[in-house]
Length: 241
Image (cartoon, rainbow, N blue to C red; front, top):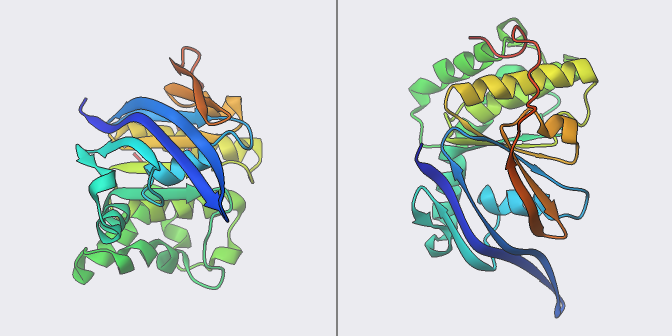
């Protein structure tokens, strides 16, 4: 598979009133199109900062980040925003749904900032909602949904722009174990469809649903290994085939 992401000696630091804090140090690895990779580490390990850089929410301070052979350091802010809006989907622990809007309207949000023609919006939204098995909840308000349903709406929202890559930041953190299994099965099935998944987590059991695990500690990659005891959950759960 072609390389989607290439990192070489990437670092990130923050300057707060002259006090420089280095968060990421000499990060180097590649991710291929269609891989399911878990980035794992404790709080303060730098995993969220790394996700922000990989997801075009921030730029590296030094080193190289190539996405589809484009050097991110050479891009203007509007070019980064265009990639973020058209090729990247995000799923968060707290769902980040608008509470007094419907499932349909929440899934529609990314399209409002995209170049997708308006006459294609309705089909894209309905296809994404159907894909996660929530067509019957299409007109429900998000505050009428269970936690698992909210996260499936968040997945549909991440899918609606047909991204190359999805970043899932602690996507099961607010869910019970059964519902968490459904969400992880959904991500595995998306990966089988060729979408690259980057899962950010501090839980090893969650990370073992991926095919590869990159461990961070104090902003440094301490291991990068294929997962030999990968967890698979209920094949009938989650996403529609």
